[in-house]
Structures are given as structure tokens and as C-alpha cells.
Length: 372
Ligand SMILES: [Zn+2]
Image 1 (tube, rainbow, N blue to C red):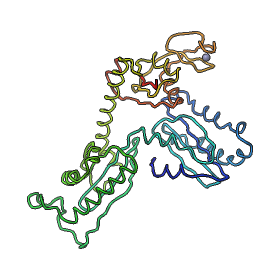
Image 2 (cartoon, protein in one colour):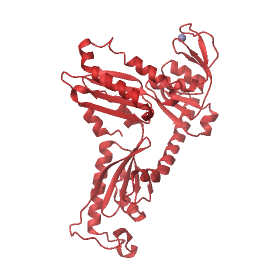
Image 3 (tube, rainbow, N blue to C red):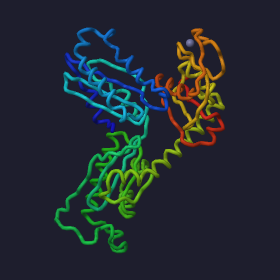
Image 4 (cartoon, rainbow, N blue to C red):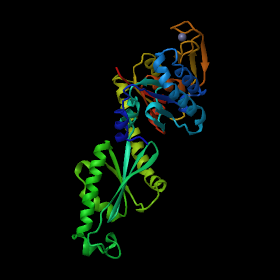
């Protein structure tokens, strides 16, 4: 999973005389209806003609390694693949990502990490804090994956624990009297959580634990952190990652559904006012052709037929026999939406696939926020 600290470290790597090869490949099956990504990949790998001979010699091993990886790991591909390699520096990193990436092959004296940083900025990450009276665990959920980042274990200086567990103690007795060590522990948890969330720029938090633990820690969080909390779940302290993910998934889905609905509402409102937004496939294709799309919003499984220029890749929703740009022959295609998505990604636009939304369906199933 991507994390900012690691990416910062990679970005700062520099070869004095050596080189890094960075490959980005859009392998999203939704936007590669005919497996086009392998064609794009092979074309990108033909760098021997354009690279300086001495540089090519230095990165030949990296190119071979990348080639082997892509050819033999197809089953692992999700939507975006990023490979960073420098044999001279004994460096290799692979990322199989749940988002499509703009194709690119970069050969330089440092690894190219901007697309990965952009994913951290553009796709919400969720922290999960599991907490009880003496320990805490922190996880991050990003693009459907969960990773444990660390734990806090505050040692009781007296070396003994009260029987029955602190959170299980009778409400009356302990309501206003927080055990000293527990409060020390919770303070430590709050501090660690604060620095983790701000260091990684994580904007959303879910708290897991018993009801008592959750309300106790919430009472201690700073306002800025409390504002990030989108829900709480009952989770056992020593639950496995998969189990934690499935427990908090409904909270994440509900939050994302709400965000999607807000996005669609804003898209429709802006489009109606002609404020850098369009609705409907015809308009979307036009603005894509003009390279104006900033973010494409498309309903999942939305399909449409259209026309595609066999020589310059011009797209059209309306029937035309000849391409208005190059006079090439326009061919009928039944996956125009997929091709539009692929074009958007290659222009560096973001894509949001909306799972279900009546308003977007009524508005044509697709729309876009524009750069200008
Ligand atoms: Zn054409």
C-alpha cells in the first residue's frame, strides 16, 4: 500500500551516475476493452531509439526486469501498475493499484513518483484506530486494502492489572474516576494518532473497540481529529486485518456513497449553470477531444455505441463516415464509454465511477468537471 513517508524517501533517491526507470501502466479492464494496455506497454518499451546509447546501456537490465514482470504477473494486475527500478542502486518497487494510471515510461536520475503522490492526494484514505484500556492499533484503508501501521502499548508501571478489565468495570464507580494508567495510555494514543494522521495527511478516521472505549477516546480527541471521525464499530482488539476491514467497510461505503451523491449533485448544478461542467456522452466526448476534462464522472456499467477513427483515435457519438481531423475512416464501436475513460486517463484526468445514482442516470449516465 502507498504511504507518504515511503514515497518521500523514494522521491529523494538520486543516482549520481546511475539511472532509474519508472513505468506507469493503465491496466484497468474497464478502460482496456481489447487488452490495449499490452500494445501501449510494448510501444513505451521501445526506448532504445530515443535514449542516449550510454544511458540505454545502463538501464537495459531494468527494462528487461520490467518486461519480465509485466509479462509474467498479469494475474496480479488490478487497475494501475507502477514499477520503479534501478539495478545499479539495487532498487525495485512494484505497486498494483486499485486505480487506473496514465501510461508513461520515465528514465531519469531519480525515480518518478508524482503519479503515486497524486493518488494519495486524490483518493481518500481512512485510518482505523482500535483501542482498549492498555493498547491500541492503527490501520489504514486505501482503495479497498487494509494495512496495519503500528501499535501503542502503554506499560502499567505497577506491573499489575485490575481484574475484569477497566472498561468492564461498573459505570457508577468509575464514571468520573478514570484510572490513572488508563488515562496515561489514552493520552499517549491520542498523541500518536495526531502525529500519524497529520504526517500522512489522512482525512478520515474510524474508531473500533467497545462502546466504553470508543466514547472514552472520543472524549479525549482534539477537535480537528474529532472532525475526521466518520463512524465507530465494535471490533475485538486482536481481530485480524481482514475481519477489521469487513467490520468497517459499511461505514466507508456509506461515507463514499454520500460523497458520490454530493459530487453528482454538484456536477448537475454546475452543468445547468454552464460552470465548467457538462452532462451526457456527446458533450463529454467533445470536451475530451478539446482536452478540457478535469474529472470524469461515470455511472458503473454504463455502455454506449459510437464511432472511432481508425487512424487518429478521434471519438464521436454521432454517426460520421469520415474523421473531421484526418479524413480517416470512422468505425462503429460498442464500447465508446470505455474509450472515453481511457482518453480521460491519458489526459491526466481523474475518473470517478459512481455505483448507483438515479440523478446521474437521468442526466445521461456520464458527465465531467472541466478545467476551463
Ligand atoms: Zn482521424
